Image (cartoon, rainbow, N blue to C red; front, top):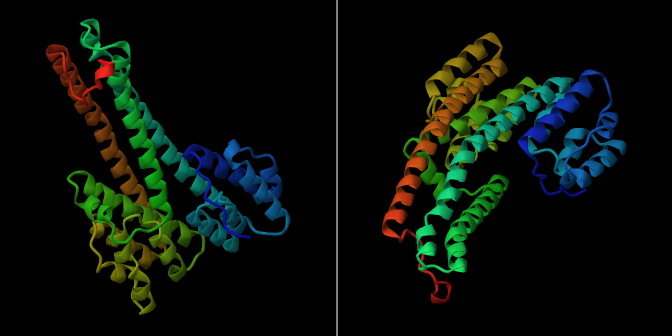
Length: 331
């Protein structure tokens, strides 16, 4: 059976999906029966029905989930390794925690943006009022001045989401963005740290599930969204194959937080707790990135408010404002 398109679900829904599977697995309920009591959003109904059918035919959940598009390649790899090692409940719990954390971050970001967007909409409708009252704008001209920025923002948002999804599903080596994003002030270092964190977390989860290092490294590299950084980390399997330790192989790479990561890996290799050391580093970096995002979430709305207030003041005092000239028939 050919692989279906990936089913895009909210992070909270994926967290609930893996929480349900983990609870059923812990209780000893077969996966076929656990899926019978599971409900997902309507857009996932076809994929869920196909998953149930394939499981009934004898397929395993890692392969069937990937073919139906309900599991990402990383999720499928983790679950496949856990099936071989008998630790499915642990991996389900890990994945549930991972997606729940992402859902919390997304919810916090939306709540922070709610008030700035309300202020922006208020400003868009207030700023051209003097021109409407003074007869410089017709009613339809007033609506155009108010609505065209919202339509533009909606188009940019939709286009950005589509571009992000395409970027997540296909590698774009040498892309301009891959060279530009790490060099951005303030954002660039956090962007690279986030990529490294994703790699380390994925590698730690796969090793914890029982996957071998040489099998796990390419899959972990695939989670790095930046092509240039991914090319650096793609050299690690060759170093491991030549007999190097992970510490030695990673010593030739350059990225923020390298010293801390190498120290933890060295300790993990010496004590036989490498997966736990990798996951500890990922947790530390997640906390650091969360703190940084919290600071951005506090200051960016303030700057946004200041910009909107200045824009409103300019429009009210000048009777003009920013934006394209209206067609004569709308004036």
